[in-house]
Structure formats: structure tokens, C-alpha cells
Image 1 (tube, one colour):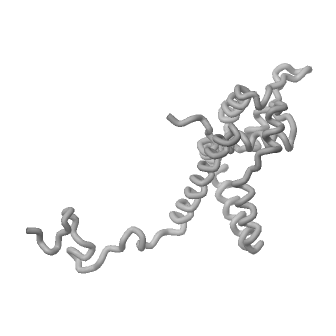
Image 2: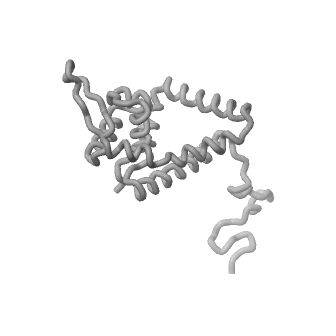
Image 3: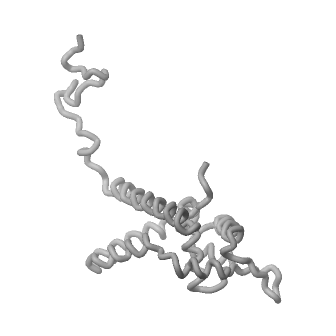
Length: 187
């Protein structure tokens, strides 16, 4: 027979030992930083699900669509310019462009005067994709932010900016963003 201070799985009840109840994980106080990380993780996971739906419906991931929309708005760009705009390493952009080129969505054009200069341009197929496929997740987030008071959005933007600047100072932005934007299939 079990002692009264023991649960059936052998783990003592919350009040065993010291007479005080242990807080449950749900009610334990959490630091604002831990809560922020959890919320950012939820946003990231929602963005990943959105990317998977985009891939299933339109044949491009959210990352690829972002590159296509950037090229659609700005015109031909070098891979280094894309890397700077996306805040990622050149190798990440190279992989993205390789996959987009393989899928017939971009072309690499060498400059006439300087053969080392290569610009990434949208293919005719990609121009249609960039116009036709909405970046729904980002639009939804913007609409939500538009409903908040300007002061709150300004504070939020200021905080995000400080985090990015701190990460950039430590050269962590490229690493983190590279990981987030990596659209290679998982095995």
C-alpha cells in the first residue's frame, strides 16, 4: 500500500516535504523575457505553417515569395544586395537563388562590361507569381498592428529595433535570420 504522501507514479504531491505547495508550471511566475521568447516562437511557428501552405498552393515558400516580391519591387539585384536587404549571409542567398533558378523563377544575368557582376532578375513566370500571390501573413500582421494605438506600435518597433541592433552588433542577426529563412527541405 502506498503512503499518503506518494502519488501512484511515485512523485510526491506538491505539498510533500515542506508543507508548501509547489506552483504548477502554468501558474509559476515567468520573466517577461521568457514570455516574449515564447510569443515570438508562436509567431515563428505560425509563419512556418503559412510558408508550408504557400508551398502547397503556389509552389513557393514564404521566403522565396519574399525574394520574388523584393525583386518585383526593386528590379534586378546582385546577390550581395539581396543578402544585405534580407540581413542574411551570402551563402543563404546563393542557396535561395539556386532553388529559384532551378524552378524557373529567376535568372542570373552577367553584366556586359564586367562579367563578374551578376544580377538576379525575375523570370516571366515569377513576375506573375509575385503579382498574383499575396503575402497574406505579413498583411494580416500589419492589419493587426494598424488596430493598435500608434504609441504602442512605436514602443514595439523600438524594442524590436534595439534587439536587432544588439544582435547585429554581435553578428547574430545573419545567423538567426539565415536559420529562419532556410527553406531547404527538412529530412
